[in-house]
Length: 258
Image (cartoon, rainbow, N blue to C red; front, side, top):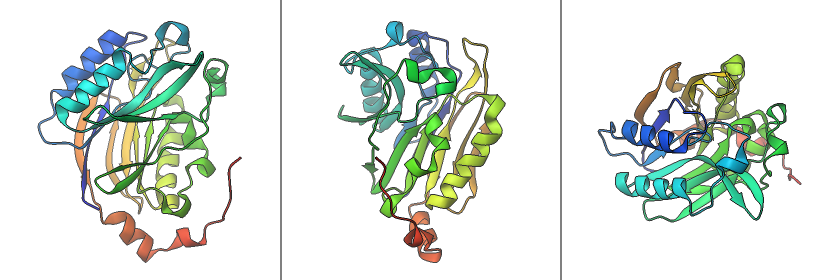
């Protein structure tokens, strides 16, 4: 695999204000000074983690999807992050994988955050998404999914990079900082977690703690408490080298999720 250049935006999100969030993200992204191949935004990057889906949901042809297409085309890279989508009278916390040519794929969050009553508003997904970029197999997931290692298990080396977009509160930041390295080491893959910062509309504080962890558990990037736009490169050789030196995935249990 080739090396992959990634830009993450750990942003402050304006509560339930799509226009202001898209304007702010566009302004911040204008600070990119080098060619990037993937831009990763937080969970519900245009609204914050809101249960007000009836007022905030968009269609798959809506304003935010159009913005994502325009942004992907402008920077000639993939743009990903999750938004609230209404489809067939259901609401989804849906991650969009938007390519520069406007083609896209999506992943609907499987594990809905019952503590925040997400399951009372949104419909759960039941399928993983594996996408390819520059020879990398990439598995994007959303926030609470991080707590469920069986769902994230790298079965038959199906991915090289696991992405988690989130609105993860500071009060449980220790869990975030613990689970992301665990997912990297046990799955012998890069893991990138992109979180938001600041208080949301419920006065819950988010400290960010966005990070990139290598397949061996090394910290490639980490940022706490403030907005950050950062571009870095991950090595295409690392997943294969790690699996060759430590062939632990070959001894993994076989199972199916029903």
